[in-house]
Image (cartoon, rainbow, N blue to C red; front, side, top):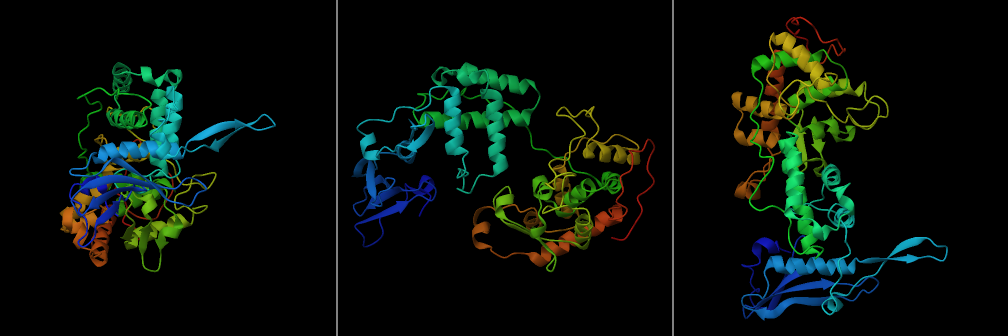
Length: 460
């Protein structure tokens, strides 16, 4: 197995063999056949449904130096062959109902009669894109790992919002660059730069898919223009802001006080905390074991838990109503959101009924002045920055955040710094405790009109 996209130019026939075939890690059946003479050719091995016998087609002339096709050209051929093998047709049953049946095209036959595009309208093309690229077996392009359910839902939602009605009934072949530019201009006018940037990425993925399947002839994306430009966030909270924030957190109740406490204590991402399951908590070894399916980079994360983090989890267990650490009030499902106190333009949200807004109101009363806008993810940056202030080594801080080490470090350094991470997290928990983070009392209080007294120092 090999990453053919990256390695195909450097692969050679193995010593002593007349030819060697290397198969791609992610594109099942696609291979590069290397001959002892130095020639190379692309091959696709497949089986027809119901037939166990393997078949093979060659892309380009066999054994040419250099190969007749590049990886991108071979991949385009591969996608068309896979589409043919998974083609379906609609048939009518005797009772008048319609049902889809598999109607595959042998890749050998496809070269004699190319597959006609199955998608004529935007709606039909979208449905085909969802089935193949966002379906049950969808994977991330960069590493071949399963695509998270939330990522699928978010991408589908963005495309539906902007390519749905009234565009859905339009012939997709008539969709031009000016149409895509108009969609992106309207999205950018809302002031949501991050969402607009993601929309441009998703539109590009969709139309590239349509080109690869010969649904359209050319990519209708505007050239050399980007929408939704954003700069990297740099917001993190100082000791003074943290002390005021902790007063607001400790005055709230389950599940929001516990959610914000765990975000600060662990440095985990928001969804990793909100969707946490009790089965992930190893009480005996004091570890939080997050499976790869729930992490952004699809790397399983084992995080040591400080004494204060364990105390917060024990208190949450008194209120939890199911499999999840932080449950919604009614149905025992995981907590969905924390809300926001500021809009995209950095102004206070007029609807101040979210947990975020309540906590910010109390923190500002404690500070005696307005806070600079911050998001839940900024608490992760806050924790990482304070670890550096505490003298924690950079590699330990990055391991706590579950950031993949770059280059050869990730390849050769396989040591797991459990003891160092545990020490760093305990030091960080002790600092938060000194600033006022406690487990008790956990009662919901109204947002104060005047400054709150200094937070009490209560042992967890």
